[in-house]
Length: 401
Image 1 (spheres, one colour):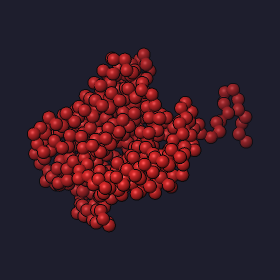
Image 2: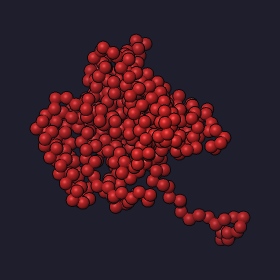
Image 3: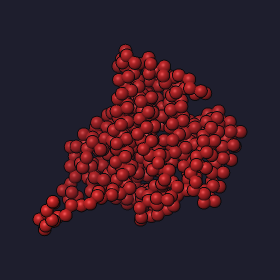
Image 4: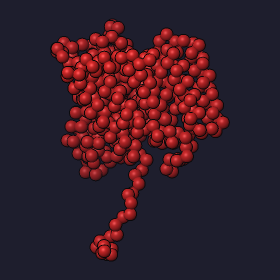
């Protein structure tokens, strides 16, 4: 028999204390980031090993109307963008970005973190047709960045992880707008018109209070086909669908379990985090390094992306954040010193998933595709290593420990 509880031995707790929704989300994103790191590393090994030809042929093999790589980038990634859209809507209506004061600080940081890297890239590619890739270093990979933070454990305050998530969500919104506005060509007005009608039907379901998700799913599939054929990148259909999914707002309380948006987000998250994003990373991170010379690393595209991610991101995020705090638009994340904030700003230079995605839209020829991958891998790796090193070395001020 177990001895009875005593004042010196408190009674054992029954069951686990439930984690908050935000902690569950951070844990999920962090685990997904670690898996993504492994998928990217595996892609590099395979692309430079005896299976390199099979890897390349497999990605370009035809599977119906599209190649395997196109199904991944246009099909599976539509699910990723659907999840991104759901997160944006939830955070804007029922989360950390619900009020303008909540949006101000990460909003300033995200805007600076998109503008400065784009300018850095442009400086390396002025007057060349490669200027088209200006948006490649403007994105932050939230899963990858949180994966690095997960390796640091308790060294990083939760407030900084939440801040990083908020910056990345606004960053994702900016990336979606960039893709829709600057990386769409040859628009088919008939398909666009039909897509608009389907979107109107989805909006009508929302306004009618219909929460049956299969109805949204069927119309969403039709919307994806129409957007794919319209000239706008098919993944935008995922974001548009997300904006029509009903949500039941419950500010100040746990997420409403019966809310269609929350149900769909929770159902999708594991598949996207542990399946779609690692598959995308494996399919797009493989770059053949055989015969690679120093000249390849000094190409304007490669240098522009690497410098944009590593130098432009940290400068844009940190300077914008300091300016916003100085102007009174918000306060520094609780429990964190400026050194730690700077370390997280450096981590924002990990642009892996979204940067590779935009790079694939900007350039289609093999030479530039290789330059994009080298730049993204170099800039992201430098940002990850430097950001982690700063967070290991910098301690919180004693006054806020």
